[in-house]
Amino acid sequence: MVDLLEEFEQDASTVGSPVNIDEFKLWLAVKVGHEKVVEPEPDWAGKGQGRSADSVINTLFVHLNRYAKMYSKAAIQGSLFSTQEEFIYLINLRAFGAMTKMELIKLNIQEKPVGMQIISRLLQQGWVEQRTSSTDKRSKIITLTDTGLRVLDAQMPKIRQATQIVAGNLSHQEKLQLISLLHKLDNFHKPIFESKKDSMDLLDTVLQDYLTLKN
Image 1 (cartoon, rainbow, N blue to C red):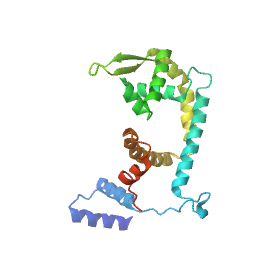
Image 2: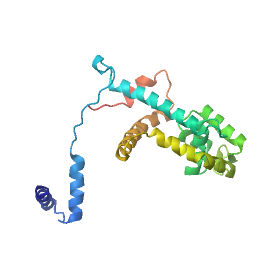
Image 3: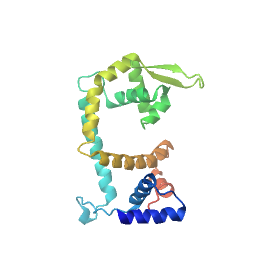
Image 4: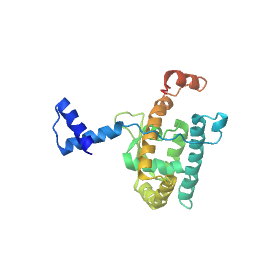
């Protein structure tokens, strides 16, 4: 601690910063944040035979998606919901308020035909209602109804249980780390998805125009 205080005082005098406990805490946080922590490389099936980390990540994403769907199915068992997409659409409308059909579909990262089918089912159930946009007569604004809110609230306890189970046995800090990594991946893939590039050239285009790996 004495060595750290001396180092802090030297740095502070160099840049003309005040020497007090608050400045020391900020300095220490930055110093610790820049320290490189070397963690042992994880092992995985097939690693010795040349199986890449990319392959493992893709496989685990597929597995985790299936696990999440299993818990979502259990969460709506015996309810009025037919699919997990239905309650996810309602959750987003409650969280973000009224929006156009396309905004709602894009928020859920789905193709337009699939999203329109989900919205049609929600309209038929009376869980949402639509009105013409005041700024664009071609667009329809989707709003959560009182009936939709009641149906959603009735199922939320089980939905929360499912989301808690999906996060599994991760610690709070591990959850924060995972959120950061998943956000980074989402920010990479989302603009590619929204660009609606032709599937024939998609892989080559992404590798050439978007993917820059730094070892």
